[in-house]
Length: 317
Image (cartoon, rainbow, N blue to C red; front, side, top):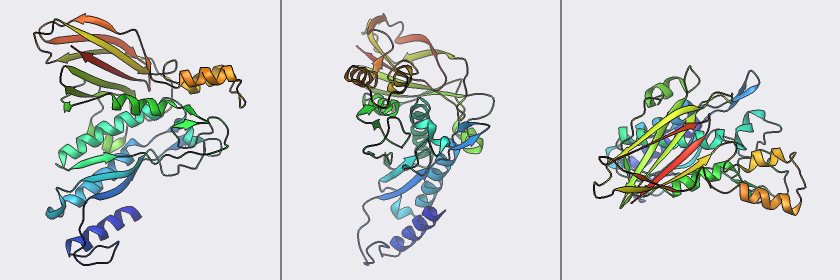
């Protein structure tokens, strides 16, 4: 609420020719920045995220900016866009933050990124970027549950989600999913009803396409994997075959946390264990890269996607 009030005051001052930060009249306004936070809490002994809170913060800011026609074209940076508001609150003392070590964090972030893009499209906003407010905490226990991308030099699954995003190039293209919760439904009640959010984000560049697919649910509860049938269309008919690379974040891929747990959660890992954790923390393929025929400009791929898992499927030709 304080952030929304400040953004409103900031835009009012700038609209009348004064900068609320510098106090100067006629100071230029180059971009607009504000924070958007979700809400993590404990419900019936498990973590429940609040993706709807995160997206409602984004929506409120975009609505405010749209109220000032002179500012609508300015770049907007979500300089803190996170599942909740306390990076330094570790999971040991704040169990609602246990999501930070495992696959719940990357699947949440994938769903958040995609729906923020949808909000930006809806309001015709110039969204320039969204950032996590993550830190490095020195001399802390392994996987203590701070909002970090790595722990004692071991990369966490969330960092691999950003690696996946970094492998997507070109323009965003349309995605349709029969398993998507839908932006309006998420804004109204989050993703803790009868079904998960199984959706995607896709890009296309010269001679390549990429699709990010996730199985997200607000509650940290087990569930059966979802059967996914992914169809990518628009491949040139001159491309008889495509090379498929399938990257995965789940309990056994791109996940140093579960590898650490299987070791017995050592707080003083041996050099050999540390090397194993470093390797487990990298982005991993679900299967070896393979060639597949493209039929009528389309490729279809089927795979099970566990709850809170994320897949990146890249095609090149």
